Amino acid sequence: MFYSVGVSFVDHDIFQTRIDCSCGAPIRIAEYREHMVRRHCNVEGCSERALRTVSFGFRDPQFRIIGTPMGICRRHEHAVGKGRMHMIFDPPRG
Image 1 (cartoon, one colour):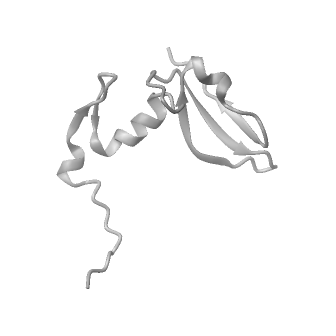
Image 2: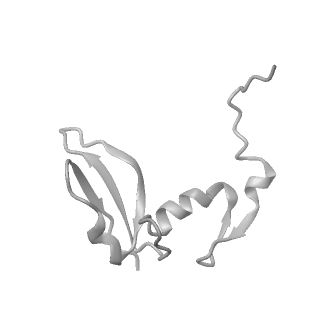
């Protein structure tokens, strides 16, 4: 029987391999998800580079941020809905 012990393989050589993102950036496989979430627009079907990141958090006295700040392009800033959550936009990237 096989038991998982929760070992992380991020330091394994294969995850240090660099790949070229469609934007031209050389990214290590271990950092690919973070690159896609922060540097590319997260609106479904959009392939634009992110110009800003947006963070979400519940409206309460402690203002807890939920999840990872996500990239968004200027064309889709207005598509981020309003509701019970605050949104924090980082300044545009230069």
